[in-house]
Length: 166
Image (cartoon, rainbow, N blue to C red; front, side, top):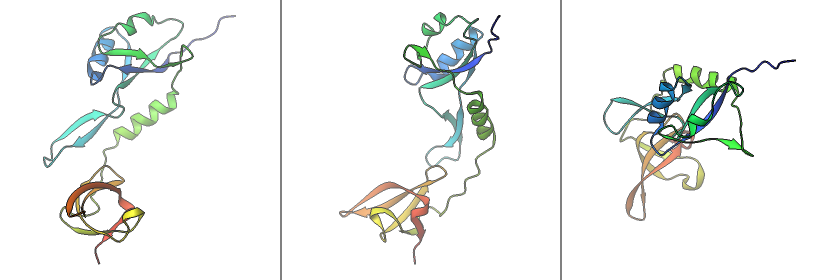
């Protein structure tokens, strides 16, 4: 009786900031790879750029019975195959599909407030303090400017902690 082996996704740890190099060299060796990227904006510029969703990692699809694992470890940019107890652990196909679907939908995140707008913190340890909204920091957080100890400090708080200043 022969077992039917199917390719599975595995996690690769890359060398620091070498995800794209590792992916490029693995693709040249005809491995199927997936490096989830998300679009972000940086600073005051509206220009968007892609950054890794999981810095230092990428996924590779391998058939454990047919594919040769040895060239992977010596591939430029690759640090190791993530494993437990000396065995690489497969990642569920459903997880990869969910990541692809979620990243395919453009993020339409509207800032909860306008930059420079006065806001009041309504939760956490800084409750009822006044601050200045600076920018959104993802979908669920905001950067605010808070006057602490006679100095303005930028801090990040959950969006649901903020409300319009009354």
